[in-house]
Image (cartoon, rainbow, N blue to C red; front, side, top):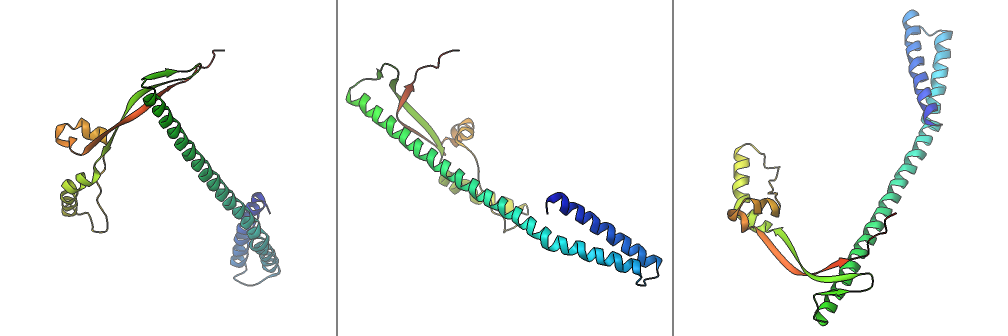
Length: 191
């Protein structure tokens, strides 16, 4: 059975149930030839839905679940591939950096590509220090305001927001610099 057939069978089942109830009401609850016919068709439709219909829906659901598993596996494989490519990219940059240092040059230019030494700066939040200073106070205030014990409190911010807050919050920001490589590649031709 397909979904249209299942929906039609459900509609037929609902209609027959309504007809059966009305027939019983009109006959004062007595079983008649009409009610027996309706009950026979009802049983047939119920049987169809609970066997063929259920199996069709089960096959369809299993196929979709298998499709989800496949998509997740493909995504995991793609993520692993991206991670591998990123590690290779970093390795190539480290080799270029070694070339620049070994040749004591700040910039090299090949026929098509060029590289130059630069500095990479990254910032991160010192979350342990932030939690140590503020988490207990915030948790106490939240509990006092009615937050139940079954709900935890967490501090959430980023380095940019802390830096924008000024010197008072700068102690919770770590700035790291490291040698890096700037990569220039040929421009695509205009069409």
